[in-house]
Length: 86
Length: 189
Ligand SMILES: [Fe+2]
Image (cartoon, rainbow over all chains, first blue to last red; front, top):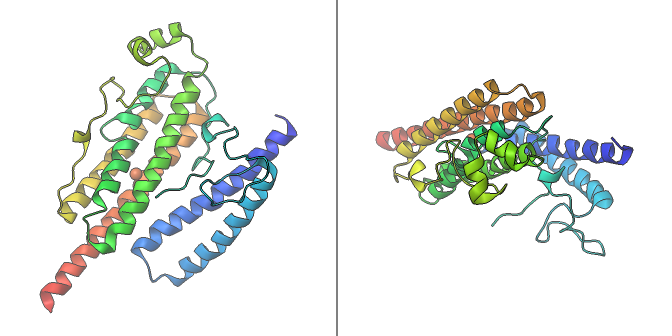
């Protein structure tokens, strides 16, 4: 594996890990809305996720569509790879 | 509305081309207890369930779409390098004749997807029990699928999906408890 490819996977996995924890906490909080500690953890991870994605996008192009991310020039959203291609 | 993010919920890797496994995996793509049925079932029920549990149905329904994408990725990767002859040998000759290598919403036996795989009763307890059963059935299917492969990369992704069914089932059970508690409180006052 090329070093640049290895870096891509490493950064992507980090995002997948944080975002998975966010999905889990989100589902949990839907049925446990008073758990303050879980809410704190959720908010911390939201911040971490946003930071990781900003960094990832600065290296590999737009990750989120419809205005959830700023765009560089040229437009990079529709570039490969798509998730099933990596 | 929904936003798209260019990532799978969990990595999907396969260590070899395995057309037969791809055929079996379509059970979770367009089968009765598959991810499409799950996503459509929950996203459809969410309009008419009590406010307290809309969020659960909305979010689990959304997560199922991410699982559908993972299954599609498995099927795509397992068949990407297959020849027509490989497809024929694995029992996908009929599929190839109709769809080439395109994905199609069908079960492992080639039966096309149908809305009759799930229902909406309008009774939240009845709907939730269907949802719990659906999760448990999907969990079983993932186990049967894991039992049929020795591809450790594929097993890793399938194990993730199997575990998610357990969590979803748990959340739906909590919804039942929340609704029963509310019903009992109304009876007392
Ligand atoms: Fe599920």
